[in-house]
Image (cartoon, rainbow, N blue to C red; front, side, top):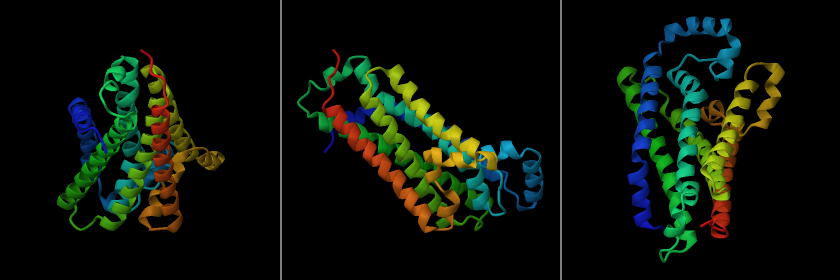
Length: 266
């Protein structure tokens, strides 16, 4: 199904980057959770009212009163979308475009392996890497919440929100991986992937500033990630969550077909 040697090689090449992002997300997660205090609700709302555009742009207009609302409001608004997006952009470029750009792909394809097996190995590595990052972040939040505020976190709601978060990562990953398979130069791949992700995040932030820009939410795929709807177990939130997974999987499938038919520069 996959080239195990290549799969192991990718872990050796990328584990340091994964650890760095794990460390950054751990720091922010613990810091945010430690800031939770139900009695500070009024103070935070006062701050939000004094700078409504800023808080709204980062998805923190309403921090809520429960630990789950507080965590998802601060972490899922920008931190757990923007930082992993950077990881996805870099990783997708490393898995395909970088090999093509530096000429290594020609040697990689010289081994008696089908192109489909090579690209499938890279896809599986990317998804498994994201899954490990997701499980790690989930565990950090659960463990930290348990020790700091035992029994306060709505675990079923939190798990539903994380199902949507991983769907968002799969969608971003699919788009960036497809870009990496389409272009031959790393600078083009990085530029295009960054432009797509930054556009999605920026438009989402602008759409939350006020009623004047609210309709912009229909111009960004970020709207498909309905955190509050998933926490409440709403049917429409699950439908949009499924769309994210569907878009990501479709992009991976197209990327595989593009790679198999691609003319490799020597």
